[in-house]
Length: 205
Image (tube, rainbow, N blue to C red; front, top):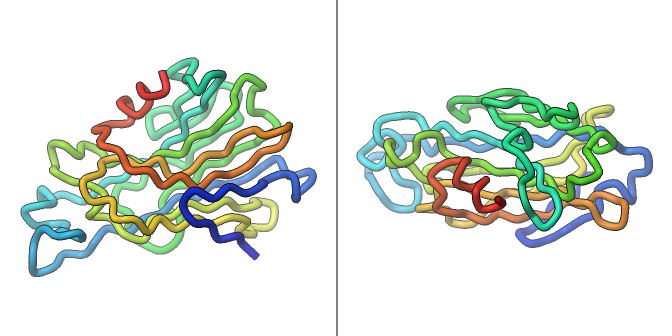
């Protein structure tokens, strides 16, 4: 039975699951379908507010070292860098539309291989080319992050993002972090005005 979290909640990931090292983090979202009107919270995906293009969301992982800082550009895992140097984090690749059921992007993590200097894995979703396309997260609905045990495909944790993210161009959706030699998960759900992943990364540099 998956634990369903609310924004700000934290839960143990490994303490109650001895021996767990490999997890899969799934992230998903749906594009808001075209409507007759424009603007508003949901906006119109293909109307004046949507720039005529699909909203292309990208999921990324920022591997954070001491003092909440990124040590290297190689510690940012995204569609342009699908695997961490140590092999502990691997991205499934880019999904351009968000259409369809289930996860849109998946990230495999081997917690036992995460380097000792990495204290936290931050999961970010941003909108590709959002400024040019005039897009924001008010055009996305049903966003979620979930953690599964890949050995049995059982969902362990789910966090559905339900806030109004109109105007936000990137989301910090969740974190997996070390705590007393165990790993915990935090439901973050913070929207920012960062126009690109590199801007989000700079906030940790």
